[in-house]
Image (cartoon, rainbow, N blue to C red; front, side):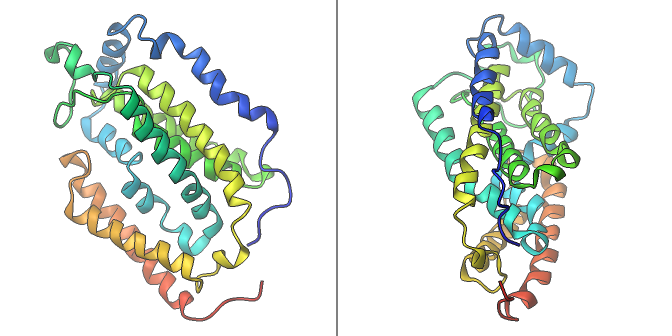
Length: 264
């Protein structure tokens, strides 16, 4: 599958992340906190903790590898799309947390007034790394799609948004952290298109070394999903499920990998 010849997105979309930051300024400036956080955290408590922890896993890199593992066989280009966004996401998340050592809700709010799932976290709140990751993945895949197919994949944005909201629901982040994470993640997804356009067609072949390396990364994801408790102990069954998805994808990938390249 070769890269589409059309432009990945309209130039005005570069303004969207900055518009999100501007509109969300009252939140990330923490005007009205902790009232906003408490209202959302308590409202989300009507849904079981397992629902929110499962969504939160979608913002963990190992969880994303599990969720997108079928793309290794079905559509490698879209797998490469979010992998192109990953370096930008990692840099921005680490840079933000390193420069802005803001306290998390559990360090500020009376813990008896809020729902906390898992171990309480107290430091490096800004931005929400899980939200950043989720929006980077969603936007990278979305804009890698041909424009005429994008509408049917609008659910990617809903999944990313739900992942961000889960961070408030489990008591890990302020609403402002989620807004900033969403804006930065979208920016990463847009940047990723420039890298994706430079991915050689050969890299989409199952027999190419690069895609085999991605398969090895997924093998590492299977180990982590099965052995480590990623974020929450409640996610263990979901982790096993995602590990199974990767295993099935790898079983399908290996024979293709050894058949040799297809004509480009």
